[in-house]
Length: 263
Image 1 (cartoon, rainbow, N blue to C red):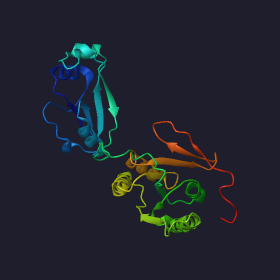
Image 2 (tube, helix red, strand yellow):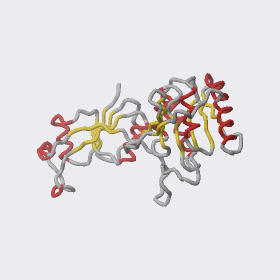
Image 3 (cartoon, rainbow, N blue to C red):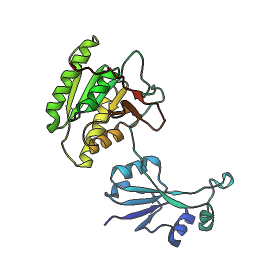
């Protein structure tokens, strides 16, 4: 049975919870230990963002105690009545830790005109979804993630990548095939994707084509490469490549003559 914890150091919040604002197994007021969290547990209240991320990483849920506090009352103790007046409520947040950053580093999502990005994709039965972006976009190398069932398709795509590389005057082999788990286990896929994100994070800019693989694979890589890659989706029906980002970007149209019959 999942457990619920309410975390706060404020007396008014404890009273608010006791009066029906939050029903929890235990109220934690001092040094909450996130290591007690098991998958499915719920932590309510106010946690530092890095601890909220740890709760989510352990499979727990974080419900933040949110309020609309006017500037003149911020930083002061609030009573339970004042909390209700300021709209106290529990809102669930999903927080992901994406690794240490330095303000001295350039924005990894900016594609340099002098150094094409690393191009990542997932081997799949749908050949065009991976082949068209390889033809349409600049890249310096292609990384193909392939499950055991998709090794043959990965080899076919690799041969295609080298053909395109030769046409562009690039050295070959221009690809790397990375074996990945063939599993529907979300935690294993997410763990694998995070490891790969860390492994490729120092290689400059990255384009990640999320069109291939299973939906779980696409979700896992999308989450893991969230701030480390430009995420792409190739729509063969609409003849375009969509850029998946929180900031709206225009899609990239695929030219009608991009692929010929011999190729």
